[in-house]
Image 1: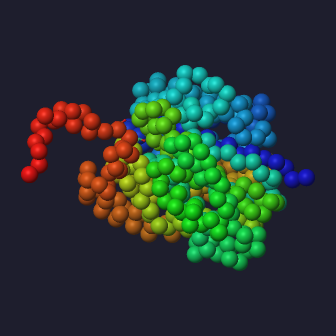
Image 2 (image 1 turned 30 degrees about the vertical axis):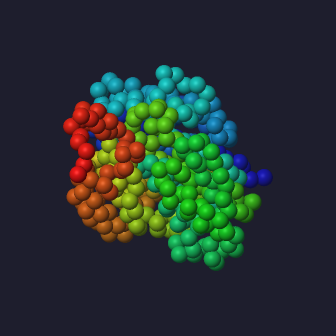
Image 3 (image 1 turned 45 degrees about the horizontal axis):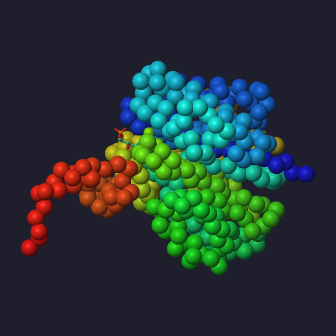
Length: 379
Ligand code: F6R
Ligand code: MG
Ligand code: MG
């Protein structure tokens, strides 16, 4: 029997150096020692720590299923440890995404974002983790629709018989906490009618119609601002995508990021900006706190463990493939910067800034109040 494995990718922004830029290495070490300890105790099988901009992501492989209290607590404790370090150094936004005083059984609703999937490990199990900074969960709507429903992106939909029937998309309505499952290709236009509205609908899961495969992709769809009822930072999302052998090839998963599509949530969570594909090391948001970064990391799940590559300079460490390191992406980065500079020329005017109801915070009600009496009937 194939081994059943759960991947839990849990992320949070718990502080960063010099603005919302990058976590301090001491924060990462503090988080790492908590997670390492849980491997030693046998709670989880393996882990990988990664970052995109100011967000720390913890990927854990284990056999405890999704929403497991023990597994979520590891992530919570790791983020708390990292936040403690950030507080000691008076770093910016220390502890920002940890909205509760204490852990209470499940990390969802407490601030961090979680993308979890459970599947039977195939003979070879290549997975891509997508980590984003300065944007929000529905930013993944467009690339996931391209990857799993667009034959002009994924030729596998046309010529691989395990994909030819299409995929199911699970979409959440983040405002009303409802979800719907739509079958593609037949429901494609219905799907697009929802997910084109990125203010409200976000793809949560994509599921193969081939029962032997199961879950194909999952996104963290927590909305921090809705959880907290006020602005506390953005819900920079993460996603996991299984690939190959009846699923989109790695190249089909990455191709949509060749288009620096505009996503929302840049600077103060209140601007549109183009995706900028980056390596982990190049994910510091340096231009107007951005542009919104996307990092893609590749690895295998091998007998429940996370298998990466071993670099000569870091023996004993399994590192993921950092896909956007390749120079092929330089051209896209260039284009992204052209779009970034273009849209920034609009300053505080739409469409550079989000519509009033989507701004993470605004002074407009106070300004309205202050100038209430200055208005006169228009001619
Ligand atoms: C945070 C972010 C930043 C901040 C901005 C203002 O993830 O994306 O763009 O929103 O730097 O930060 P505050 O309001 O903390 O001064
Ligand atoms: Mg931040
Ligand atoms: Mg961030």
